[in-house]
Amino acid sequence: MHVFRIASNQYISDLSGYGAKLNGGRWNREGVAILYTGSSIALCAWEYWVHLPKKISLNQNAFAVATIHIPDTSLLTINANDLPFDWETADEDLFGITDKWIEQNKYLAMQVPSAIISNECNYLINPLHPLFVDIRLESVSPFQFDQRAFGKVLLKKP
Image 1 (spheres, rainbow, N blue to C red):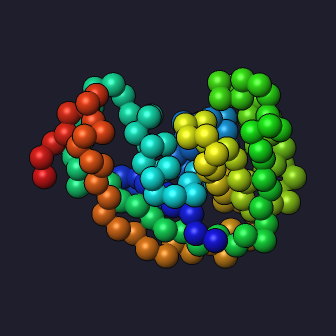
Image 2: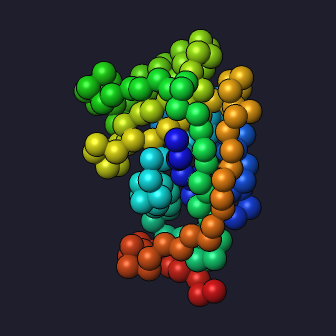
């Protein structure tokens, strides 16, 4: 199965989950390494975009998209209807789900609903799982956001 990731060129090949470990995220508390990926490039773009500050100066040549192959034989699926009513804002509840997934170490990846686009999903990958060695970074390509999406940011010209 292929999943995708958008990041700055500097970090696009780092699949360790270190950035999420440093900063935490929707599904993980600080100190827990998780590699966040998405089911499509479009979803990854939205996920990245909504986390940008209101005013930021971006170098359009600074981004890349990675295509990553993960085995689909070790996947835990979490559906939105299995989550608390306010799951989009209930980080502590989500942390508990992720902590249990990591602690059990049964599944390499966890499919979770996107809080940004209904009916889309993200894939969290556990870099400490034994099957992590089977993950392949298949390609890295330049990625540019369409300037029309950036009413809230200032884009640097290349």
